[in-house]
Length: 433
Image (cartoon, rainbow, N blue to C red; front, side, top):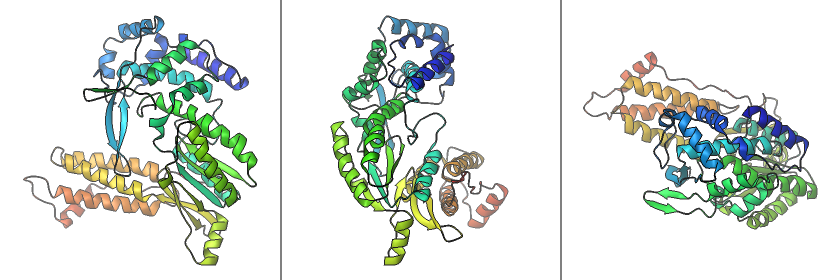
């Protein structure tokens, strides 16, 4: 069985840190692709070939058999990814690459193999797109570091266009630290060079890993494991005078230091380190701030407000518990809050005449519950209530602009809400749990 073989590979990778795996390509077999197919989300958009999961499933036996044959005789060629755009927090558009369905299966199989090996190497402070780890776990880790440690300074750094600037040559060199199967290396190279199709125009991909691809997250983690994580653990921490810690979620990371001199030295060295691997800091988004229990004490002494930083959609700020002792608190970041409201406004505007009011309320309930599950974290109750209030206000506005239908009065709208209540805010995640 594929799972048994992957577990065996994981065990060897864990026991032998310098082991190079020479025979992996055979794992990309019919059993692997069937499992990947059944786990694939059928609601995802189709790629350039237009094939959906349901369509591929109609002739699954022949399709999978032909795919394996193409891989064995090396005639398999990934198709260009279909480029689409989604809005970013800053109002700009983020490009995504949607792979053809068969390419998604190959990527998923490769992702399983890479994960089995590299999960044994990845460090404990890395959280993004790893099995059994979540954004909330990263937030809890960061909370422990700042509250329990001697942290006084935070380096909030942002890598400029990370996914678009991953250097293919360096990435392959990193992968070859653990994988010596030439067929796997050849396959990864073909995936990286598959290109992007935007409308009718083909764009070659000389750098980067397309956001949206199944395998992109694990490739990104491998790249940053060597560029950032190991360097921080084996060099930065050992050369600091005081405590130094990092928490990373994909390309979003925060570094914490006991002494300002260590923070400044790291920030300056980080620029050089990233440049070596064809990356750079977005300086307008990066900063060194005073943060922690001592920062809180200093702000009181000198009559100034403590600085804040954003991480994973939350603004982190210095506060106190009920006993007056220092505590890190979090609230939904202003940027994320505004983005979510804008998205909701655009959505309700587009569907108000297409759906019944019952259907609209059902979808809003699901949206609110999803929002609460992520942002419902210790200390963020006030922002959850504020978000729900704004959602109701936007809902009332657009329901009154439905074409050729009698408008709600505020009184009638509130009566409808009483009979058809929207979910109330709930804290789902205890940061100390």
